[in-house]
Length: 80
Image (cartoon, rainbow, N blue to C red; front, top):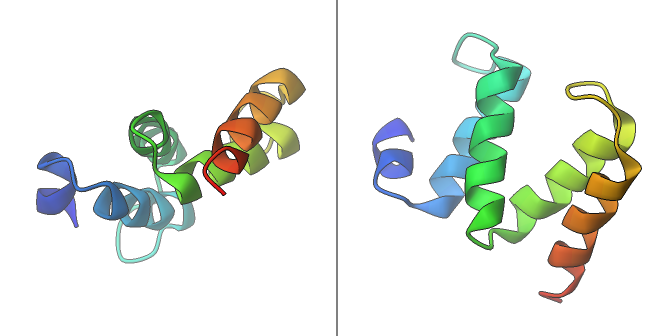
């Protein structure tokens, strides 16, 4: 996944972010996970946008921010 993410393949960035967030097959690194989610979401990846909405809404990984959460949810909603 890392090589594909480095080449800008958005689904790979998302998958790698999930792996970092959960520590699945790789050392858990939530900071790196958020960076990857933001990178993919900023380029229009729907699942990353939705996930960031959840992350900012819940406030478990980052500081809770409802405004940022809504921004990401709205970007995701605009795609459907």
